[in-house]
Length: 141
Image (tube, rainbow, N blue to C red):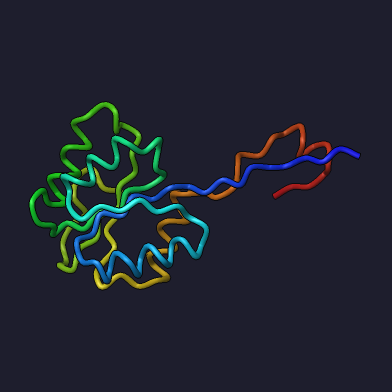
């Protein structure tokens, strides 16, 4: 009998939020759902952390940050070819349009259901199916 081990894929989310209580609660919720979470407290640190990450599936960034704000971070991502495929979702307490460079806006205070919905949409946790394996087992997902 052959033992086959499948690597668990834990997509990484970069969370850029300056409020430690909000950041901690969001990170804990995402970790409970099986995501790796990298964190930063402002846009400057967020860019530094992002450069060190292999390829996060999503960047969640508060638009109202000290030092380098969320909008400036999103603008910097759009101008840097290294981050061309980076998915960004903004977070903001103020109503308004989605900033250019972001896919959506989560309104603050962020509801857990909304957070998980947007992360699941952009961060699949399963490896792409291998057609040979799917066909061999007859299982379709």
